[in-house]
Length: 83
Image (cartoon, rainbow, N blue to C red):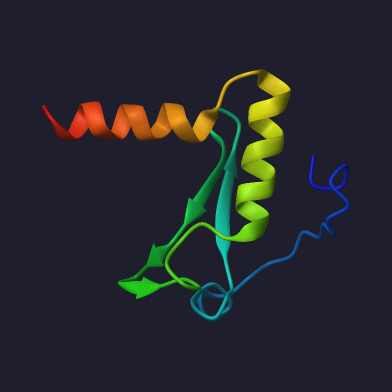
């Protein structure tokens, strides 16, 4: 999906320093597709918010599956926090 959006893609082994100094970071998984990372080891990643690339990928994925995955996650988060 990243390549379809014209984003450069590479796979490489990273060290913790790479994460700590990144502008943004995210996990990719089969069930959730993409999970932005805003903190690691009590350190803020980038500006502490999902970055531009994460948002682009989430929007493209939402469009491809016909569900706003961010809205669904926020809805679930709010319902879980009220328990």
